[in-house]
Length: 360
Image 1 (cartoon, rainbow, N blue to C red):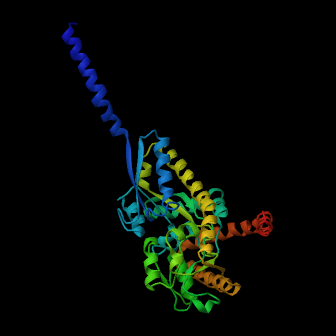
Image 2: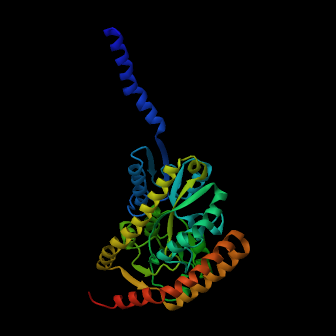
Image 3: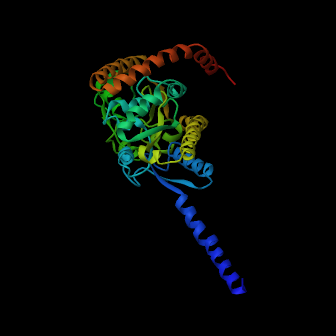
């Protein structure tokens, strides 16, 4: 072979190395979009999607990338489930109870009044029938779910006036996270409002809201609620352990290789564990700072708790009658919860009760 022929062949090889190979790599790479229901300012709950996205990229060696888009960037915060169902985006990060209006059963995938705490929710989802039953239900919306975080038991919200009895809820305009708690609060006389987290402060400041619940001290402090509503009540009995979820379009998920499906599942587990740990780590300091800033942190009275429980049971009975999906999943959830409450009465409750009274 003469010198010119060698140079010609080397040139072709160089083109293959520098041009064709990257093109093949580009074709093999996967690029997805994730729509969040949360604003970027909430680094804990919005941040769960970032933790997930970074884990997917790392596990895939950069071959699978998922861009994260804050609520309102691609679609409205409460429109992300429609985006997944229609295939507008491959996945979303949200709270299932936001879609209670579509079917009451959505709430069971996250939190219902006087439901599970975070650990009990994990137990039901992983070792009970929770994930199986919820994904059977979500199949009706072309989606499959994965745990995407938990806040732990939330606070009961910010109020412009004291709540001494159930009668104090009458006529109160209160921002609530989902339609289910809205129905319960209506029975107590409140007027529920459903607005995204980023709009709550202005509504409280202007007086178009009398009260609002969001998550807990760390997030609530970042949103500045203590500046416009001085009374901070606990516990958030409607969110004992609310699960945040990733929803993936079923067709998109089915199109992945077995390896990439495993990466999705593993990365959601990373994000799920990280979120609750982060809230638990950050909430104490935020709570102390809120108290130092003259926030009045108060428990709901026994009368309020009892009236809330009664109203919740009435709403659950009504849902049994109108949604067969709710009835099936709810029955399984409560059966599992009875055993969980029995167990937690012993070691966990006694230990926590003792430690809360000690000086460390």
